[in-house]
Image 1 (cartoon, protein in one colour):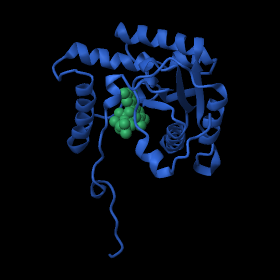
Image 2 (cartoon, rainbow, N blue to C red):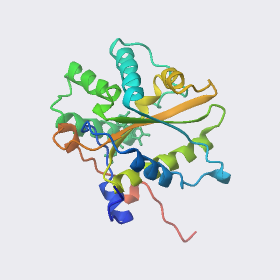
Image 3 (tube, rainbow, N blue to C red):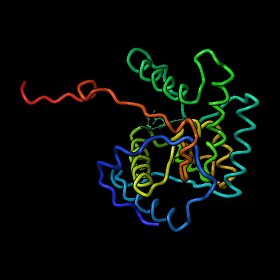
Length: 227
Ligand SMILES: Cc1cc2nc3c(=O)[nH]c(=O)nc-3n(C[C@H](O)[C@H](O)[C@H](O)COP(=O)(O)O)c2cc1C
């Protein structure tokens, strides 16, 4: 499989979070092409700090099993980095709008606690994706270097979109980093920032009807050319 003939604008417009997948794995040769292209992501002084762990087959099954067990029994999470801040004001509103859109498509009402818990668990079930990637870096690298990993993540996501591969970045994949290190034989010095489930989209999964919008440009970008 090769990249479909997609413009950058199309890839930007068509990339979205996919939360339901077919069983069929992405062929290894395609994975190498896609991750090879993401490797072109820029980074501060070209240090290329991203450490990427791609789990498929038995490795994916084992990580999913461990995470589902921990999450469903309410085991406390142990992320390598602090939790998300408590969003307020406009940020809180956008967070709520995003959740409402997703839950509505999944048929979950706001006061359906059980439904929301089930939806949250879908993260650890990897939305049934045949692959999950974890993105990390050396533990001591700070926020500036984490930016580089973010650049990598978006390069990868857009490349996947161009190849017809669906994906969902998941902050929730950083909750049990010890399992990732254990399964991949990584030292404590490797810290996990987030993950991404991916594969071929199952269009019949209700969550995949989700489309979230964006704030108008004027809310995010200030152009100024006069003092
Ligand atoms: C770093 C990062 C972490 C995310 N974590 C999760 C997650 O844990 N679970 C989830 O369902 N979506 C997660 N998302 C997906 C966002 O909710 C999604 O990107 C956002 O709502 C915009 O929607 P779109 O990707 O469809 O454009 C994450 C996205 C990013 C960039």
